[in-house]
Image 1 (cartoon, helix red, strand yellow):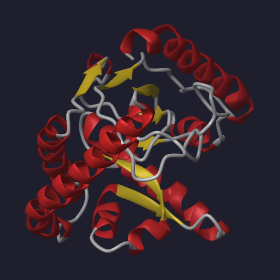
Image 2 (cartoon, helix red, strand yellow):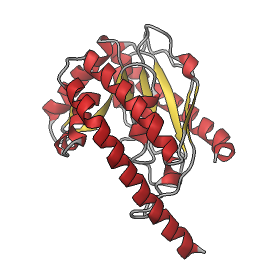
Image 3 (tube, one colour):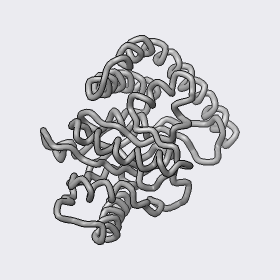
Image 4 (cartoon, helix red, strand yellow):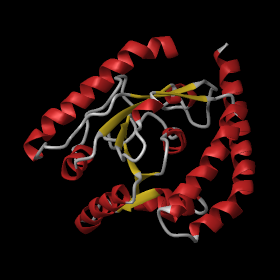
Length: 251
């Protein structure tokens, strides 16, 4: 039956890509119009469009997204949201899934991709990881995003987790930003995106419901750089344990 599953997985992948392209063509004009605005209006309007787009697209590909823990986002407060990263699907799940205006941190190379580049320029702080100046400037830009009343959504694992473990080790950046700005951190955990896009399989996908859960915020006011390792470890353990407790039930 493996051959049958492989065929179905590739047929489904074709269906998903065709539907994505068709819906994207519908969204291009309004997204282009929004791209002419200035922040924070530009990002907020873009996310309204993205949420509407994904609210239609994800159920049509049989991958509805269900969220839990939205009550942790308090009106008027801005957060640094740290999420696990298992799949290319994580970005269209997390950016629209985090309530309110938000931006992600993305590689500058993504801005060069036709059409997608326009979206990344709107919804992301872009960084050239080979440039010390760009990395420093990106920190200032993320602080500016927070000061505009928007959240920063970051993947502290850096790259997609292709291991068999719930998480890869975290980098310091998200936690250093939280300490420097005094913003609380909300851990976010995405379940099942790896089941949809199986690592190591090319042009293959399987539909599955997605869960996006938020954990209670962790305050960072009063912390300094010496507290960074403990803060990072605390959130890593929180996310690891939550994933371990709920992954089987949500599979």
